[in-house]
Each structure stands twice: as C-alpha cells, then as structure tokens.
Picture 1 (cartoon, rainbow, N blue to C red):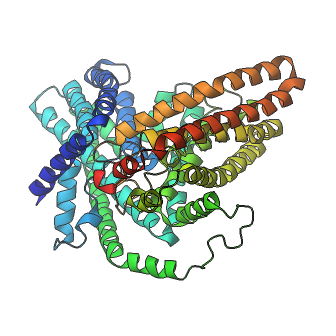
Picture 2 (picture 1 turned 90 degrees about the horizontal axis):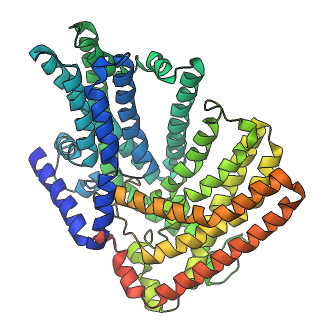
Amino acid sequence: MARHFARLKVTLLRNGLLRNRSKLPFVIISALLPIPFVLITCEAMVNASDARNPATIITVTAVGLSVAWIMIPVLGYGNDDTLDPTVFALLPLRRNELLRGMLAAAFIGVAPLFTAAVLVSAVVGFANDLATLGAGLVLAFLQLLACITFSRAMTTYLGTLLGSRRGRDLGILVSVGLLVGLQAVNLQVQRGSSNALDAADRWLQYSPPGMIGHAFAALPAHNWTPVFGAIAVNGILVFASLIWWSRALSETAIRSGTANRAERATRNQQSATLFGNVGLIPHNRSGAVAMRELRSFRRDPKRAAMLIPAIAIPMLWAFSLRPSGTSLESGAPLLALTAVIFTNRFSANMFGVDGSAYWSHVAEGSAPRDDIIGKQAAIGIISAPIVVTISIGLGAFAGSLRATVLTIALLPYVLLTHLGIGAQSSVRFPQALPERGSPFGTLNGQGCANGLAAIFMLALELMLMLPVAIALVVAIGHAPVAVPFVIVASWAIGYGIWKITTNNAATFASTRLPELLALIDPKQA
C-alpha cells in the first residue's frame, strides 16, 4: 500500500507540473531559491564539530527545522497536500493502511529532501566511527520522521477543525496562539543573554529536537546517554504524533461523509433575503457579490485559513522589536497594516476560490467589474477591523496613541493599493484551488511557486507605497504640520491606483471569461 501511495504522489507531482507548463519557470525558480541556504546550512553542519559550541549549532538547527515544518504549512506556503485524506474517504481502506500510505508519500518532495540533506550533513560532521555513524543515522531519520508526522498530524487536525463551522474559530485561535507562543519563547531566549544562540541552547535543549542536537554533539565523545535519551523521547513523540494523525484522519473521513449533509441542511435554513439586516452595502450586483463573499468567509475553510497569517504575523513582528534593540514606542502599531498585505492568499486570487462555480457569471455574459468590486468590498470589510483592532492593541501596549491614529489614517491608502494589485493578479495569474477538505492544501507541489508569486505581488505594492512612505517620514521629521496633507494625498493616490488597476483588470477579463473559467477549474489543481 505504501508503494502505491508513493507512486501516486510522484504521478500527481509530475502531472501537476506538466498540466501548468506556464508556471513551470516559477516552480523551478522557487525550488532553486532555498538551495544556497541549504548548502550553507549543510556546510555548517559538516564543520560544526570543530566549532566552539557544536551543541548550540546543531540544537538551534534541529529546532529550526522542526519550527519550519510547523509554521510553513500553517502560513500556507510550501505545504504539500497532494494526497488529501478526503479523496480516499469512500475507498475500502483501513485507517492503518491510509496512514502508512500517506506517511510514505510524505517523504517525497522538496522539503523532506532538503531536511534530509541537512541531517545527513550533521551525521557526516559528528560521526567518527561505525558506531557513531549508525547512531547518527538513527538520530537523523528520527528527527525527519518526527518533523513529518507532527506536521502532518497538526495540519490534518486543524484542517478538520477549520472544515467545520463550529471548529473554524477555534482552529484559527489555535494556529495564531501557536505562532505567537513560539515568538514568546524567542523573546524570553533573547532577553536572557547577550548571546542569543547560547541562550537558545539553554532553553531548547530540553525539547525533543533540542535533545537530538545534544545527542549529535555527544557522538564524538561516545557519550551514549544523551543519544539513548533523545531516541526514547523522540520515539514517544513520533508514536504520539502517529496516534494524533490517525485519529485526525478518522475524523476527516467521517466528516467528509456526514458533515457535508449537515452543512447543506444548515444552508437550506438560511434567510431567503441575501442582504438580511445589512443596510450599508448597496443593493446591486456588487453588493450581492460582497454579501455572498462575506457569508462564504463564515463557511469556507480556505477563506478562514487566510486570516491566520493576517492576524499572527503583525503581532509576531511587533513583539520582535524589543529584543532587536528597536524602540517599541517608535511605531509598532504601523505593523498592523501588514495584516492587509497577508490577505493576498485570497485578494490575489479572487476568482480561484470560486472555482467552477463562477460558470454562472460567465454564462450571464456581463463584464466582471461589478464582481471584482464586490469581492474587493468583502475583503475590505474583513481586513479593516483586523487592522484597527491590532493597531489599537499594539498602541495600548506600546503607549503610542499617535502611531495608532496614523495607522488608521493610512489604512484606506494601503487597502486600496492592495486591492488594486490583487485585482490584476486575480485576472492575469489565476490559481485553481483543489476541492479538498483541508484548507492548508495548495496546488500539486506548487506551493512554493504560489509563495513566490505572492512575493512578487508584495514587492510591487511596496514600490507603489514607497513614495508616500518617504514623504510621510520627511513630514514627520521636518514639518509635522504637513502630515495631514500627506495622508489626504495618499487617499487620492490610493484611489487612483485602485481605479486604474481595477478598470484595467475588468477590461482584461471581460474578453477572456471562458479562459478564466478554465484556468480556475479545480480539475486544473
């Protein structure tokens, strides 16, 4: 069974690349980008035994690998979910067979390859005879297995939570709490010593990957106690992760067969009035699209998962200021504006989330401008309260009321610019999303390419925002009385960018609606 799943994984990866040949350059570039970092890390592992603090180097590296396996799938880029458990829910597969097959498939991919390369380099650096070589290989395999099993168990469990309406909010809170908790540990580590790495080693050596690091450092001296301890603790972690993953797979399979019926029954009980008691949204086509998107945000796991990086990343960056020596009072609330940027998983792919359901708009035949504006309105209605809430919280924590006011004043400019660039990306580079139960699933092996496209979009937005940022800094430093004029001018600039880009995107898409529908079809994912 494991062999069949592995072959299926390879086939899906190959077909996913061949089906979207236009994206192949992005996939190649995104696969090559981590290579310099991996080579530097491998060189450091090979030479770590000769360093002043070998235990610190290997411990921080091992913990860093584990954190990457946890955070990257949650943030949504680079995660590989080509073998979704919901696809096999109706097949006569026992849970253990499904678990073994998905575990075998999880070892195939770029991330496992790079992780294995770093761990094998550590074996080369610390092993000096046959006994230490064997122990090092066992430690390396156990660390890779622990990363894969815990990461897959967590994403499967959170995907099940986000796939249900009751568990969606809890899943988002768990994900945000996980990211913020990791940053809180980092803060304590950096505050505890002037040498951040040594401080990190003292805190992390008791974690499962930290024990792996100290076990590697103990190999040259043939000190087997840390080795056996690390093997025992990480073996327990792998066993617990497999049990967690197995139960999450069962819950996913059950939900795929029963929860969908419950959700359909819930939808049938909705009010017949689309707009309900909302009076601020105009009763026209754009308003109808906006209301539909807002209701979809309450149900669709893909949209709900989008809020995780939008909420967590601004908080993480703000809390990272003090250990780096930056004054928190200098303007931490301004980081709340990045919450708008990190909604690009949806705002840069507005039609991809609809998938084949967009056929009714294509059949109706009108220009998509009203659809784009309605989707933009929904994103703005969701993003603006998040930015305001985070900025007020950071302002109260930092005692910086002026920065909070400035953040709220700049929100229209940032939001309009972001939505305008997102409209261009949505019609020119649409991404088909698979119809799967996990909201953390991306295209077949193309998660890194999607992340690279998001980086390009972010760079373009920053280039457009740079002149206003420079003018604002100059005004604050030399002529504070001019700050209100700069803000008002930014609103005009943002509106101009939004209007030009949105109209251009609508014009571009109006003659290509059938092609757009074909590109966002889930069968292309």
